[in-house]
Length: 320
View 1 (cartoon, one colour):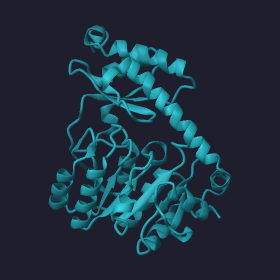
View 2 (cartoon, helix red, strand yellow):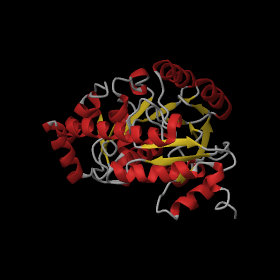
View 3 (cartoon, rainbow, N blue to C red):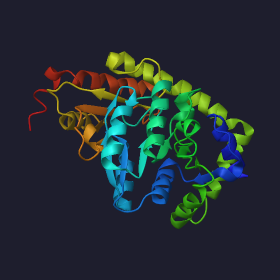
View 4 (cartoon, helix red, strand yellow):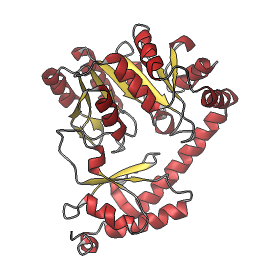
């Protein structure tokens, strides 16, 4: 029953698979761990965006994998850079977040999705698609799984688009990959998250999950609008997300800015939290928009952040 609900959930992203092709996980982090454990062996190289979700570094360390970054721009991973890295490093897998990448917020356009899928096919490597924000922000954007289903492990979760406390995710892959994925999952989690899975199933079947996604999308878009009000053109004009990535003036150290904001009980993340070993570190910060209950609280915090982003404002407080 849970897998049937998962199949229905994936169908909303244009992925049509049988229930038997769906694996239930304890969220997307669990899905990434499962996929990498199934595909890779200690010492293998895994490619990902040059700055990335910090949990991926922890997974790579746990599994003994070498994580290497691929250059990105404001649209996400660069196909030419991926092709060069595949040729030079001979990776076992590529992890890519095509929608609202964490931390940069970049979303691949259709042309780049197709080019990346072609690179992966030509290099004959496994692509792990982290579609954590797909239901929230992707709308009708085609998945990488849809472009390269034989080589892609698709991973998603309900935490970003329904509720952060709902630790349920779904995976799918080709029939050939499924046995390895199931074995890897059962090695870490003997059973699926039954209570959370039952809640997720009820929400999907009843239509409640879709209502939650619609509400979350409206709220995320509204909070992005608040961020644009105070942070200006640094914030994308057309997206629904709960985080923004801000490149700051070179005269400001992200760590110093974070320390100044802690004094105001405001927590943000400097770029080094997301750095992949060996990659250039951007002078940037990530601001979460969903950690406070109301938009008025968010607005008050962004006012302070905006003021601190002026180099003149931070000069005295940043001397250390």
